[in-house]
Image 1: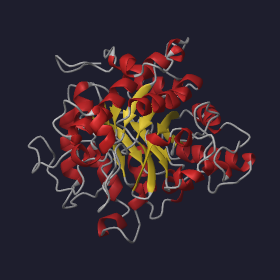
Image 2 (image 1 turned 90 degrees about the vertical axis):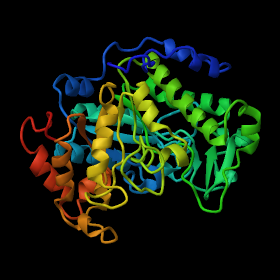
Image 3 (image 1 turned 180 degrees about the vertical axis):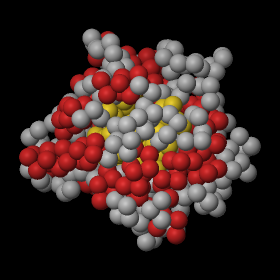
Length: 425
């Protein structure tokens, strides 16, 4: 991986993770692991194929399973159908949400089974969704990226609704309510250590192609509410200019440490993050994008996404450029060149996150009613040499295709042999 001179690449960062994670075993990191990447990813990279992915969301049963409480056979059939749809659309990757709320879609020794499977957190579904997804995705030539949410504990604020053995109930001091949800406090070193162990368990067990984080780090701001980490800052924030700088370093540590631990756990597994697409507006910072977004990841989520790319801590970045071409506050056509220039020379692959869910939604601006809008995104992106593909949110819309936008993308960009190679698609 080619990295900026004088910066530490993700394969070269040593020491910090070990020191920060003292007290938790890392024996699993040294286990024997395959010496090559799983088949589909290895093939795509060897053939220089563009990334064609879809997110498969499980939180609140968005994409799968269709509802909690289905039988194991019904759940498996629905999952296979989602994978078949991806393959049928000419996609080559599925980003599968396997830890949406400090829970698990595999038999984890760290956290309970997800309530989105049986309706009861901790309820055994009687099968292994992640194990099945990896096997069946690879059988269809699809990469399987394991998607984790590091700090979200629940989409409610009642700890009593969590499974009795949930780590958040055993460690109530780890948890903060905010905006109608529960979160682990990212400023606690023991929390950062624990969530890494919980996520890496899946990497040890399964030949996933990549680890994936989305845009949730510190929570999105909620008007009139305060994320109550004053005590944590008082304990750990010495030496920082302010709480915002300390919070950013907490997230930087998570990313750096995961960057080092993933390849130690299983070689060939890549690390990708899908941030909200505005790092900072140019009016805030001259290094920022020509946007006027109300949220800036650096300032509001305390996620310095630009630094992660420039330091080479991640293998690929998938900014959620979820706006149409010409949208005044955050124009797709203005964000593309910003991200294109950011990744240049870093060795970090750029994949553009696409808002398929907006296509044909009558609540969205007029541009999204045009079935050709998304196809125009891919055409425009083909003019930027650093763009290596696209990922669509999300699986339900890949299947239902409300206004034919996905079919138009397939016909225009994925319909011919080799269309996935650069520069197309």
